[in-house]
Length: 306
Image (cartoon, rainbow, N blue to C red; front, side, top):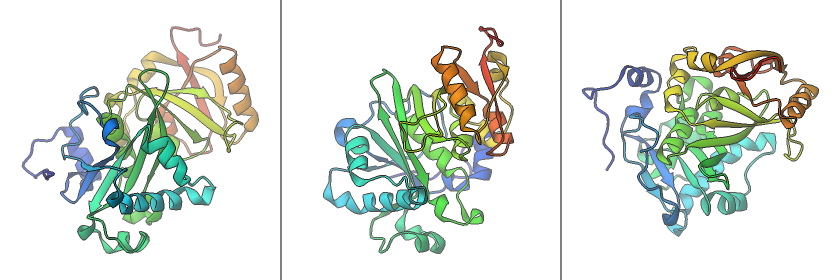
């Protein structure tokens, strides 16, 4: 059973802010889920990255059991609706071969009996599971010890009008997965100018591993890496400036322009030539429009004009 967080429970100031903005996280009907084969279950979940946000026992789903197929079909539906318009929907074999067998899948789900009408209307029919997934986050371990790659993140918010969305659902889905799986370092990919960059930049100081990826089906892709730091996560909700980032990294005179492929290629060349590593400021990404140029930062232990 999953315990509901009652109004009398002691919450931190940040948790109270999250409760104000994302009250769904503290109710009893929306719960985290873990969708992973038994051999891939995490030992001592949530012990590396200290956090008290996720107090409810996750719903466990075994993807190798036939009776869990309906849950998977609902995951496919959300993912297909979210990425289909960009021609990036995940093939079923990719989900099985690259996520279910080697990796870890998590997210949030709701008791189907408690689904509001607006959510029922946008989901596949009929809804026959006890729980209906609302989000999906996939991480896959890499050959680099301690590093996982964030393969997919989506939620039902992409199917709902803005006023009806569950605030922070995508952010908290990834946060739960990283926390639960004790992830030390997370890399990932997203497209320049995508709103996803505003989310991914809040899990730790974001390094640009690659600025241009013609090997990808979308060449204008940023490949990023963060050292997972739960101390940074609250800024997604508070929108406070990260002074630790400014102490560690200095602004260069260079920028990356999400509208310019040449800008991406120039940065890629500098990375390949060993001029980095370069970092992006989560606060700047949050403050600017999606297509605005972004300042490149480097560690202050290196010459900024090098």
